Length: 332
Image (cartoon, rainbow, N blue to C red; front, side):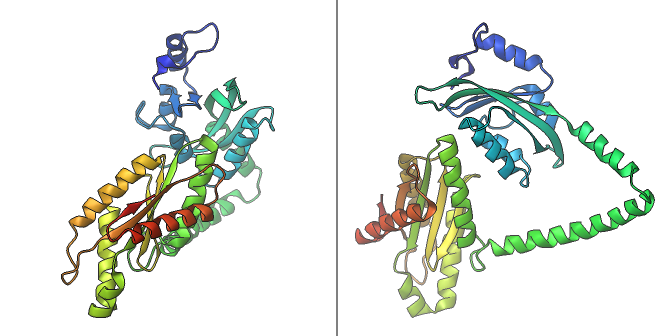
């Protein structure tokens, strides 16, 4: 939705309002909940070190810069305000800058319009840089501690140790969330990511689709040519499918020769087109001992209030309907 098509507060035209935003040094944001469009002024980008208007005008941009440790607290506070359980929306948290560092901000906002059903239509807010104040408090606390030099040295030592531990933790987490054979996401990561995707779809009223896939006639490949050749075929399938992902999509191995693709911000029609494209991609895959590698596809769209297990169960049923139609089929 264009900036001109969204209503401005009384007394301001949309052009005047956004000109005012552009003159403010703090980070101003303007969320049109009905369209999903989020305007962020140049001050917001400058505060975090990004090029002006270089990021997508969606709520996903906001979510992506919140520190992972602060994210649950921020979302809980945000939802409580939207649901009118909190009178005000004002919270402090860390945002990721362009150089990878984190900056403390104070985020405040106010709903200026609601729809007839009471849901949010539009909300204005601001991100204020409070990093200097946070750092000053930390410095004052350090000065009040005894044996400051020894503590600082010990802190540096512990920081190095923590970096090594964090690196090892990240590596272990990466291993825990990847399928050992295909190197794509495993079932654990699928369920975690799909849970977050369902919550986001519910929170921001966005579409979400899932494609369940199964390799056609996979058992004969194992029986005739051995499990090593079957494993190689699964790796080849994962490679072909992974090359078709958007940045926000997830491809996971569900188990055996079954795969699942999670498609945020995607309706059923677009998901069916994705499945058709995947089928074209697989048509170019190298045959296995003379056998073509084809898949069957079950495509479903998330329904409001549906949990991950119910969504996957519907995708699985759609997949079985595709299997019943024969090889290389798509069903919803």
